[in-house]
Image (cartoon, rainbow, N blue to C red):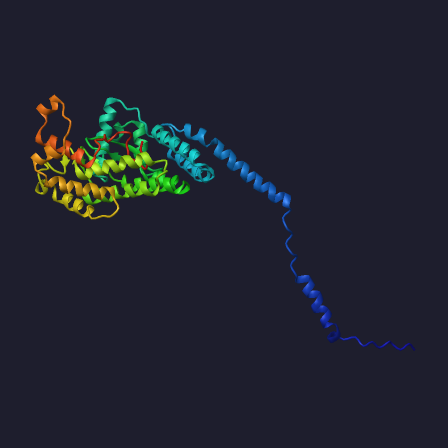
Amino acid sequence: MTVPLKTNFSVKQCFPLFIFILLIGCQKPEPQPIPEQVQKQSQQDETVDLTLLCKNLEKNMLAINAERTTFALEQINQDLKLCLPLSTLAEQQHLLKLSNQMYDSFLSVDRTASQQVAFEAYAFDLSQHPTIQQHHFEQLNLRDQYLLKHKGQAYIELYDRGKGQINYRRSPEYLARIFAPYMPPAEQVFIENLASQNMLPVFSDQILIIEPHEIVSRALFWEDYLNQYPKSSYRKDAEYLLQMYTLFLFKGMSDSPVSDTYLDQYAIQSSSLDEIEKLAQVKNSHLAVQANKFLQFLQLSEQQRLKEIPVQLSPKEQQSMSEKQLALKQLDEYLGLQNLSLSNPRDCFSDAVCL
């Protein structure tokens, strides 16, 4: 009879082996690195796509016309945000000029005489009473109907220039948001601040809308800007803005003059005189020097002015010039003011750059 062999095998002895096998089976494999060649290929594809997008940007901007939609504008604006950080200042300014042309083309409307009358009436009522119900919308040019329905999109808005001149414009916020963040500090500061200043009209029908306090604030800003950024590409425009706000401060406009006679301090608008007196206390400012001279001018009698401020007058001017006109000419000479046109060299009161 065969006797079975006796073994010393037990579960307890094998338990460590089971645990070891279980750990090996549950362990997750380490992720394999992406082959370097694939990574490089992906980066190259992205670079090629962005290069192509920016290369086609100018062509796409020039293709915008009065038949395109706001969606097309918004797409280009998104592309600009991608391309502007990769561009030089010269390239950015070229794209900025193209954007001006693009919006001009987009917002142009070829109206008949009756459509023009209908648009002016409708747009005026809309700007004065935004919630008013209009019954003649169908009389408008189809492009006007489209633009009015999409007002507020792609930076499109109605703008009242005064004297019933209402039309579309690109909001000044456009350049401040789309272009300025990617430009050098001097250009960025210029665009962002002019955009803020021109969101609302500065004047209408030869009447200043902003108060003397705001005029002083803007004049001081442009004076400081010129000191801080003497090599700005917008230097000439900043100089023009400083000169215009200086004229607004000391002379006003034809239908909202600072004074009718300039005989003395009592002949000056009180709000203007208060701000000029405060300005005269500012340190290290040419504007403050002019403010002091303005106050001195008011102390001079007519005889003193004729003696101390000689002005060249033609025979015709000597015969026809009123006392106020003579006082203004003397004031110009005494303070070193320049008589500039509101549109010379360009319009600096409608957008974030001078147009």
